[in-house]
Amino acid sequence: MKPLEIKPNVFWVGVIDWNIRDFHGYSTYKGSTYNAFLILDEKITLVDTVKGPFFEEFIHKIRHIVEPSKIDYLVVNHVEMDHSGAFLQTVEAISPEKIFCSEMGKRALLQHYHRSDLPYEVVKSGDVVRIGSKSLHFIETRMLHWPDSMFTYIPQDRLLFSSDAFGQHWATSGRFDDEVSTEELMHHAAKYYANILLLYSPLVQKLLASVRTLDLAIDMIAPDHGLMWRKDPPAIIEAYDRWSRQVARRKVVIVYDTMWHSTEKMAKAIAEGAMDEGVETTLMCLKSNHRSDVVTEILDAKGLAVGSPTLNNGLFPTIADFLTYLKGLKPVGKIGTAFGSYGWSGEAAKLIAASLSEMKLEQLAEPLRVQYVPGDDELRGCLDLGRLMATKVKETVP
Ligand code: FEO
Image 1 (cartoon, rainbow, N blue to C red):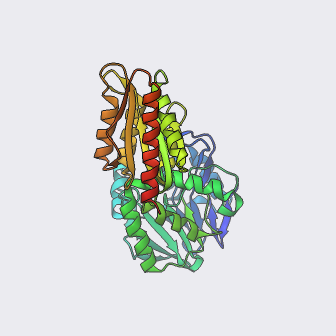
Image 2 (cartoon, helix red, strand yellow; image 1 turned 90 degrees about the vertical axis):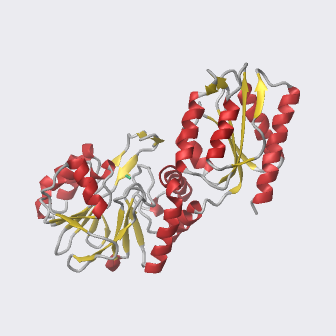
Image 3 (cartoon, rainbow, N blue to C red; image 1 turned 30 degrees about the horizontal axis):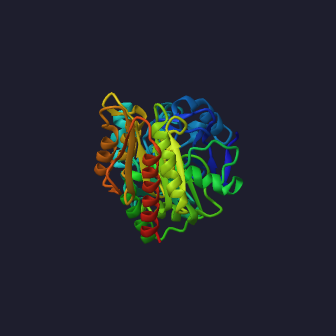
């Protein structure tokens, strides 16, 4: 795909990674993009680079517009290697006069690429660099989601380069939000938030507050992954506000795995109970659903039931994986419950309950355990648990 002019003299020069399917544990079943931007002005400026293996494609795209050696400035909004993997090759190709980055960005670049001889120019929030008719305004966004992260804003174009924020892992031929299905776009954006940013939600709230204070006029948000927002940038900002406040809906997610279908029978009975109460319910077996899709469903759910058979006196491995992942993402304000079948020792449901407690989820009931295969009475108990969860969800979600 050729470079694309997204604003006068501002070009998308990113690359599309159609084939990536795993992004450090996040299922990218529709690929991703690594966005970078070239600004033609008195000082020609490149904003971000791309993942290392895409360097040739990236530099070829830049050559469509300008000879790389004519680029004056490089802005590094974020050092994670999906954006800086091509950093050294790019620096070699363009020999920039200045490399703008945050203080933590400089430190991270040194720790990644071990080149102290490069012309780093550390910037902080509020700093402005004039590049001709346009200017670059820097806004540090520490821990969103790395210490080095920052935004770059061009007021003349009302254009915000938002690094990872507002991004989505989605490889498409469209580059803008108005070229794709809004529903699918928001799903990918929610998945990105749930898996990459959820744990930093308090910082997202602070950032949104400071962006409101700055009163930035924004016509377009250009993240480093996926589609750019030009049709309705406030829509994604509002979604980030909602997700970072962890606003829940009347929805129950039941996550489980199973050995001989006993825990599955329990999960289905719990789901039936919740559905009987008219609450939206999603049942997700970890044999069929990736952890990153499960946490996407959990993002706006009030109720969470987790079930595991006991294996070797412990959790089923997929459930241990899922709980470790979920704990790291720090969900808040949910109602949880644990269940599971067992043969003789029965630790799994208790371990789930302990894990949910560590995550500070409100526990609805004692862990529900069934020895071997649930009978009618035990399945009625599961049904009642589902009803109880749904009732509690309806009571607590307006
Ligand atoms: Fe897209 Fe944090 O890298």
